[in-house]
Amino acid sequence: MAIDKPGSFVSSLANTAVAGLAIIETRLALLAVETQQHARLFVTMMCLLIGAVLALGFALFFLSALVIVAFWDSHRVLATGLVGLSFALLALALFGTSVYLRRTRPRWLSSSISEIAKDIAAIRNTTQ
Image (cartoon, rainbow, N blue to C red):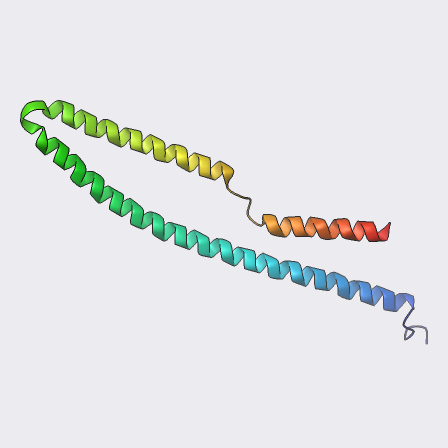
């Protein structure tokens, strides 16, 4: 039978299919690892962010209360206005930082996409 010969067309086709499936398996494993890393990083960042927001909230509350109480007798309107302005400037700075981080973050699955592009290029080079 011609099918059992090591150099036959069917054998070459089977080896190519096995190699293709191995490439797909490797890329799916990379995709799974990358997804896990992004999920863990996201959860860690959210926990840290929640803790930081709570701590900042308490600090700002007590600091603003201290400023208002300290200047209550002499400049209560000025102290209240400056505390409010400080909060507005902080909010603008945080919003600007958030927009910057959103624009500069790496694309999700960028490693997997680049590896698949390399695989496609390598396959095209071997077939030509």
